[in-house]
Length: 267
Image (tube, rainbow, N blue to C red):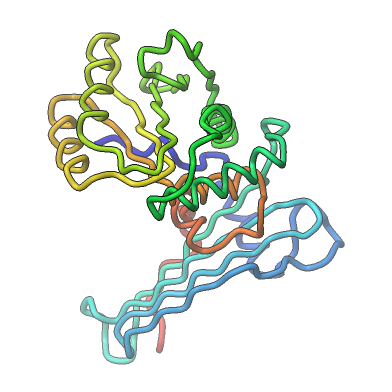
């Protein structure tokens, strides 16, 4: 299966910049300003064999955020009291591509998605979800457009992708789990239009059969990425700064990818 499309692409790939940030906790944009504040962290350790430390920092002034993933592994053949350490990081400036949605509409959509993840609530903000899905794609670094709602053939947003051409996104704003029938209809639309990649986005969850059908479709040349309400909420928060970024949100759509350190160290 190809790489994920629903992923924050506008992350810095500058190793010197990231090393400077994590060495000083200073924002590269607001030089001389206040230090970056830690908005969330997650520490896990399995005795002395494996540990990981994930930290998210944000600039209170300009919105730049940074995340680091520090892994220590002594279970893969290292010498006693030694571990392989891998430190990866990433960072990005948020809210740079589009003016953003109306705050009232965004808050309404957030509440409905939270309810849909529990199988509850109404679905009044379906039009808002389509527009904001387009906005998230733009924040991720793509050109995207909403289709005419009366003539979309089941497709709600079209993404202009450098490698895959037109990528279709179907958006389902519902408290009900999205099942295999919807996925098969999307694959049929892909086949008719000669598309190879698409996304199925929902404010709720997917049934168990969808993942199996997704796997079978990929072997037939039709790649469908699934985006459930959890990833959708994470994306909204990152793209529109509803709240400071959390570890869960960063790891869902903007994993640290730039390797800063790989070494064997004492533990």
